[in-house]
Image 1 (cartoon, rainbow, N blue to C red):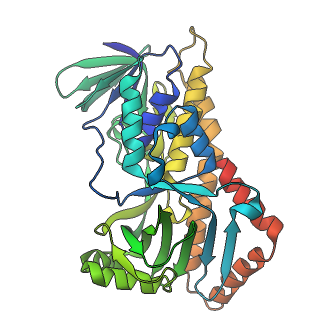
Image 2 (image 1 turned 90 degrees about the vertical axis):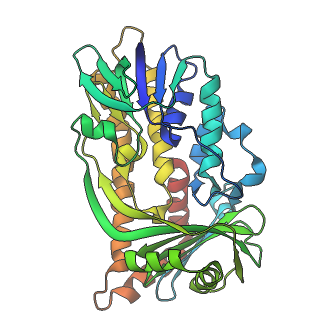
Length: 386
């Protein structure tokens, strides 16, 4: 079976790419092992979506179908240093309606999946598992576990950080392991959060409170491995007490909504995200520390940029040629590198224990907070750039 492009991986980035190509004449195959499902109650894995990516999801026909009662908007953010510093961001002061939106991963995944199922130019292979790949001059061949062989002018790796397709095609990925884990869980809180997101740079990691609808929050605690294992093993009531105390009881007492789970954190740099007949998107193309909250925002912008590159091609253009794909790579390289470098540097700054550094970095936060023009420039860049 022959297609114009084959997307390997039906996560958020791969599904959004397929949706973004809905108005093109491209014939698309999408491979995924299993369809997304909604958990009972609240999904512990949530994402902060920037206004730019809300617009992207709206443009591909997804946002309007999401359950608005499961989405919380961020009206302000309070960031605390490890020695009394504070940095405040406000949607009102920045001149926007919201700084971002918090919503569950599975909420977006299920709606994207339903859109793709209805899309006339997409053929779903689910379950679909690739086992072999062969790159030819005029096409790429992908062999499936069930014995079928697909061909296309372009393969897109959207199969996550440990991408099978990226490794099978020989593209290098360089990992920096942080020896940390991101601990995530959801809680009901005693006091209303009023749409405020909180972040604390602590001696034992970075803790974030993210607002969920009504009096609920989701937390991400980027903690050293030993502490992360300890937190996940705590009984629910003890975890609530620990998380509330770590956040200075900003929202009063907490009660559990989901168990705590943890995932390893690492920086992943992929020097080349394209090759002849291959493009990488999402976590297959880059990895970033969660303290910036931009993980899936980068993936959605990958999908947007690649879709725009492919849609701009004329029918006689070869969408799998390196000449075409390098346009996509150039479009994404600067933003990804800037965020990876900046986030990693910020993490290292607050991990470092050099004499005199702690008061200096906290002074820098306070000075930034006292300069509205600089602060609003930083907020606007994050809002519009990702």
